[in-house]
Image 1 (cartoon, rainbow, N blue to C red):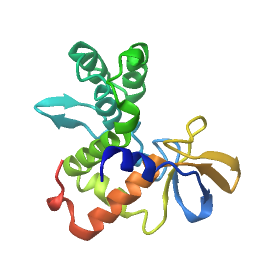
Image 2: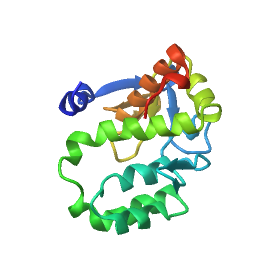
Image 3: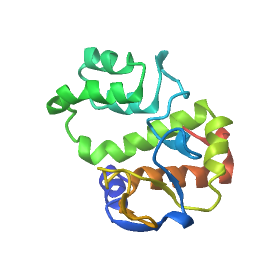
Image 4: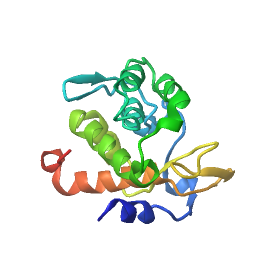
Length: 178
């Protein structure tokens, strides 16, 4: 599947029922560790320590700006990492919109491979339920609240997490390439 196919695969809006989904909004909630904003899952890529998957994702925007990457990954919190990337968004790598889903998939795989017990068990604890990131602003990565029982959005992050959970169930982390 090429990158444009990956983007198209996640371009439809869906409706989710809160009681029939594993929903996360805040990192302290039951499934909050699934969020890119969750701390406690430090990563190492090419010998570089990165405190969160959000910092890794944001740093991937700027492969030709190593000083910006260093600034982003030096942040103690995922929110700070995201905020530090904002002034440089005009310099985001060419083709980012077509590649960002594949890059997020890779970031999540890195998180799983490096935290197979804690992150893997959390993924598996969602059972067969669709995983949904509740978001106030972003219907692409998450789903927005319509009413107390309903969320609507593309929920690409939740769908990638559900896909990762299914792969984990089939073969464990040993078979993962990242």
